[in-house]
Image (cartoon, rainbow, N blue to C red; front, side, top):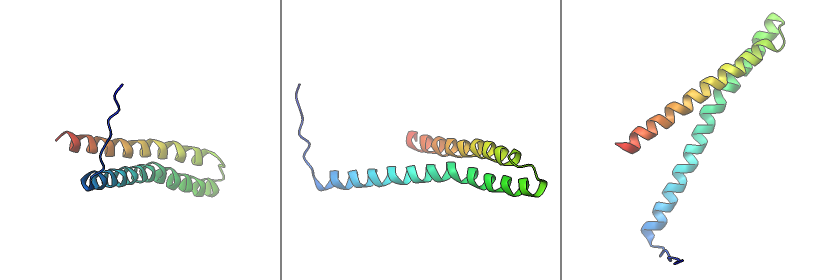
Length: 87
């Protein structure tokens, strides 16, 4: 088994930093797109539950709809990234 030694050039270092930055930004935006609808609809469900005195129903419904919306957001983001990568 032959091990290759990678020579670090300024171009490689810059490319590695930009790739790392891109991956961190994608991870943060994906987390934001997934969590935000869940939290917003959970809060809305809490308020509606307090108003109608139906303790867990609308909170659970808000979590379920928020998860569906969050997954749809992440799917659209990944689909756009895939199209951009392939063009």
